[in-house]
Amino acid sequence: MNEEKTNLLQSNGRQTFNVALSQSPRHQQHSKNKSVLTLHNIIYICGIYVLYSKIRSRCTPPKTFELDDFPTPPSDISDNNESYRIPKIIHQSYKSEATLPLEWADTPSRWKELHPTYEYMFWSDDDNRKLIEQYYPWFLETYDSYPAPIQRADAARYFAVLHHGGIYADMDILPIRNVDPLLYKFNLHENTDKQMLVAETYNLGLTNALFASIPNSTVLNDFVRELPSHTKPLHGFELFIPHFAVLLSTGPTRLWIYLNKHRETILTLNPAGWGQCHQCKQKQCVPQEGSFFETRKGGSWHKWDTRIMNFIFCHVHFCIWSGLCGLLWLYYNFIANKNGKMLDNSHDLEEQREMNDVTGKKRKWNTNNRSLENATYLLRILLSQYRFPLYCGVILILVL
View 1 (tube, rainbow, N blue to C red):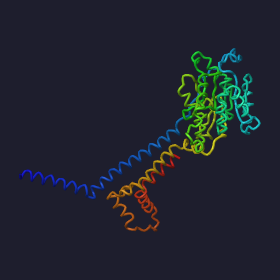
View 2: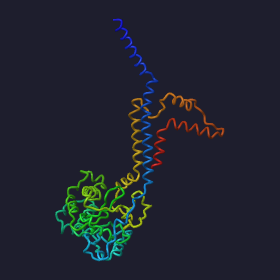
View 3: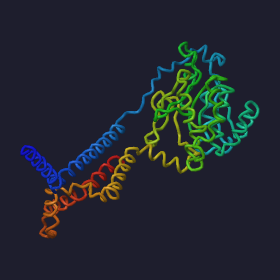
View 4: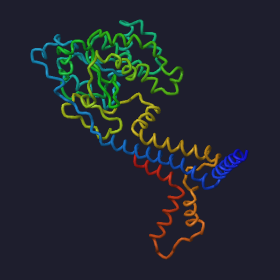
């Protein structure tokens, strides 16, 4: 009986001590600071990683173009148009040739000058519709239903190349030299099962700005057969995000999604090979040695949502870090404060005493020309009260 009482007293004593310890200000403070310090470390590590990633992306050299990948065709084949699996036909499209913008006015003549043995086919809006109506009437209703002219232009280029074969290029793509090596590569024995050549972009995707195909390609035919099922890719939100509606219905993203499942049937041309300007480095755009093309400013169909998307793409580190800082600020100002939690470490007793030393004494500004002491005084206040906002701001400036 005495033993049981002794054990009960000891047990109650331990419980009382643990409760008292857990309720003591020092223990509570230590527990809070431990969790807050862990969160701080996570935030600081994330900031350093975002900065490192930004520096790494800036220092990464652009893709190189290996000219040896596209051998020059022998003279007996080069002069014989029928020897090519992909016909020597150039396709380009715009509203009409008479309404070409000034910066693209010399594009047709440049193509014709460097490719005298090629057939040049210019497709106006009227020509595009006639092509669909005459050879692909099953698609005419879908074609007419597209709300944006660029969607009809995107779709029509696929049908033009499907019907005639050849190479298509946007009006902002100008040749630097003859493209015979691009077409001849399909004549090589290892490429007899390839049907299309498609240009790559810097974001690892494929684009419909430049592509070539054999006539009546099965992979291209199967692709256009799928277009009617993608007229509403955003399920009713196309009006609010028109850029993505174009990309996902008839644009390059739709082509990329499909061809990515049929990589065995295509060859690709990397961005350096066709002179694509990096979206984020337009002012530094210089064609690489050996490139077949150079590019001028395009995107005549771009709208406000395109500019927002391009800003996010070019400042992805800035957007990620600012979003993270903003979410944490909202959390600690509207959620954590209600529970007595603070992001800043000022709850720590030692730091609180330091704060009191700095601000509690109502220290006056030193007017005796002691600038170093004044600067130290300001720095201590800033670091103690605004440590996290300062850290966020410095990283934001560095990654912008």
